[in-house]
Length: 134
Image 1 (cartoon, helix red, strand yellow):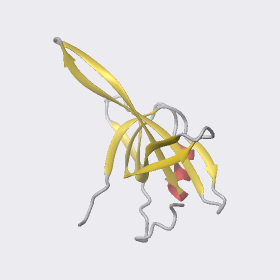
Image 2 (cartoon, one colour; image 1 turned 120 degrees about the vertical axis):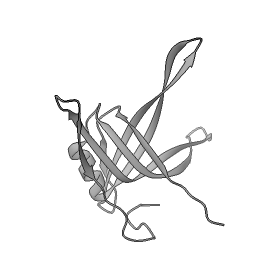
Image 3 (tube, one colour; image 1 turned 45 degrees about the horizontal axis):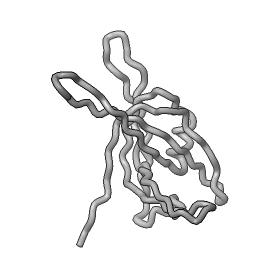
């Protein structure tokens, strides 16, 4: 039975990207994206923030390091990956991270209110996703 694991998320970067290099020399960028959900309660609009961790690899990660800045509006497309680990106290932990397959960077608004889009998109060339280290 086929399954689908695809997520699209638009939000603002909460911090500058955290950059690192894997043992194999591959560049890795960790981003944190915030998205606000607005809802009405007792005739008053409220919002609640949602925060998402995003990881990019290779050339896309390098672009994130060059272009990504706290506060930028970005569109991320990718897949969800549940990471699991055990703490030093023996407790099991997990979190869901979005593995980026495409990132669209939006620049600041122009005086006419429009936004210029600057796209950095690097799709995997192989079905095995050789650039993803898991």
